[in-house]
Image 1 (cartoon, rainbow, N blue to C red):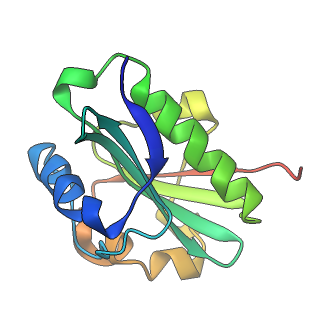
Image 2 (image 1 turned 60 degrees about the vertical axis):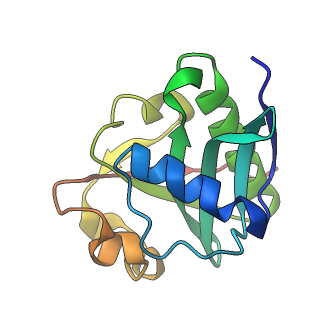
Length: 147
């Protein structure tokens, strides 16, 4: 794999949105400054992205996407691991996500399905929970250990 992972910049916004559209993932609530996002870049092209919306000591993992040509290379796993470490450093204790396609993927990172009623209220106020993701999306949570 030749892709390198780095913090996103506002200049990456168009590339991230293109990846999300190609994967049929929501862009609602995505801020152009891409705060708390990581991107994977290969020869100047954005080929992966993942973001974190932080709400105090809880956060929403969102927009995890890898270009079709870089899937099954370990890039997605690297993005998730790096993002979870950033969350831990920021003092996040719980990370939530919604997925319609990857409920079998995220348990390898410690995520477990939960009822939407178990999601922290601050996270429920996010654009993803308020409608960007369908009601059929599976809610998942990962508790982060103190370090």
